[in-house]
Length: 295
Image 1: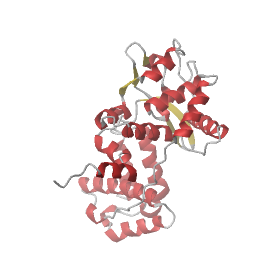
Image 2: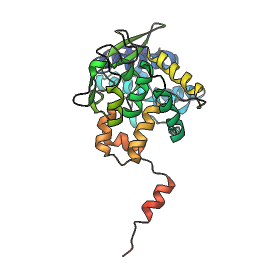
Image 3: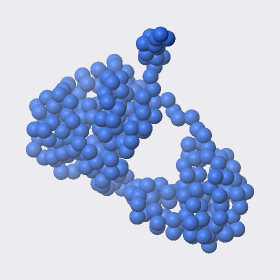
Image 4: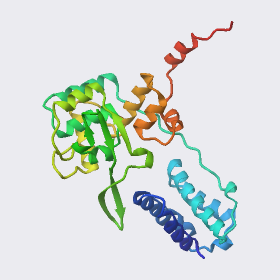
């Protein structure tokens, strides 16, 4: 069996447990990178030298982050091949690539004030979406899929039960509405008092939040709108995800319970929240150090 053939049956196996968006990502890695170097090789003849040579070739033109993503996919295929008896490569000899994560950016208080002032100035559907994101930290695909039926003002909660995915397949790109990112992403978020009063004055009977109609807004269009808004307000260019980072970081700074925050964000474990957002500044460390007593 060739590596290309093994990768196909691995993809079929994975298709039962992952979303279509993840499956398309795996296909892209296999077709664009792994098959280029390993596709025609017989997996029964694989040696660790073959795999290391493949990694070395990819390393020449990929970032460490992308290279590690490719290695994770390669390991998954090899592991499946080992289980089925097609190959016998010990996974521990396949190296992982360390990479420096980019320092997380959040909006400053001044930038937040500019955005909030802009929202309250002649509020429209898209601005309502920005306000919800500032006070809930929901993802781009989730806000684009959110409808007024998902907002329960009586019980002061927002239900996240769907998201918009972009699928790239056979050179074409299209969007679909599907379930949230993970099982933990399907959740209820309490509505902050300030957001409650904001929505109470602007609620509609039905339709998508960002359009006020039964037609949703493409996430790429809303990302573009967000960037135009930043440019209009003379705020530096950020990705839409900064709203989520800002919300989560502010929650940590306000000492909101990490377990509660994890569930609000839709994470599967507290560890993800701790590793991603709980990074104290030097000033915070100084304030905490004062609490220390030797006796």
